[in-house]
Amino acid sequence: MQRTFFAPGKVLLCGEYAVLAGLEVLALPVRSGQWLSVWEMPSKGNGKVIWQGNEADGKPWCDVRIDSDIMHVVETNDEETARRLILLLREIKTHKPAFFEHKTIRIETRCEFNRNHGLGSSSTLVACLSAYSGVDVFALQQAGFGGSGYDAAVCSTGKPIAYWLEEGEPNWSPWLLNADFTQNWYLAFPGHKSDSREAISDTREKLNLLRNDALLMQQLNACILAVKNAQSIPMLEAMLELYQALLAQALGLPKAYDDLGIKPIQGGLCKWLGAWGGDVLLVNETIVSKYSETFGAMEVMRWADCVAHQREF
Image 1: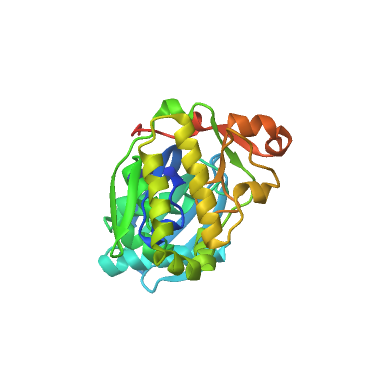
Image 2: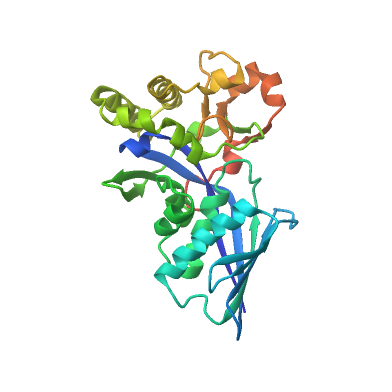
């Protein structure tokens, strides 16, 4: 019997990096996501997991065969993906030792969005595996990918949330972004993927300093709260820009403008969403019009067509 699970992808609007210092992040689900289908069959020999990852058009990009009794990769065309899968399956087995015994499990996934767009190919997988296995989504996220866990929360709930860590434990609450404020927003994809784990590792020492800078923490928190409670488009966009400027100075990171080689302009909005430097940019109509040549070379989508401001799944 086939069982099917779905998890929506995500975007992180504000709070990147600083979430690891204890501040909130504001994140939303996107309309597209990842499907995971499972077939289980009895097996007299060792348990097996046969895994196939498919693109949106159904074409396979990853094949992995795993001996689930000893959690060993038998065959694969993608060593890094196989290594991550082993970490996730081992975590399931830790919580449920008999989960894989005496059966062959065939798993097929289909990601509706481009996996290089940074919309949560890993976290949607984790959310689907959590739903299938019954193992806590945050335990799986930490075992397979690490990070703050905000993405696992968004992808498993399918709702816009404010998310924060308290003594290392995940917390979140509902949050809604006024859709009327985002009608002139776009998502722009430069076409190369940024590794959020590497980005966090590169800034870890400065993040530790950030935790101890009370004034800067207060300023960043004020920006996030202003974004969270914005009552106008100018206030919302100005606070996103200010958050980016403060964080760039604190962590020694280039702003999106610097990475693209363009200049800020009055009324413009241009900000990396999530790890800086590669996945996805938030830009408004003012920026897209002014720098049409720059963004004409990218895949650009209307925010309203991609992002869900409330649960729509």
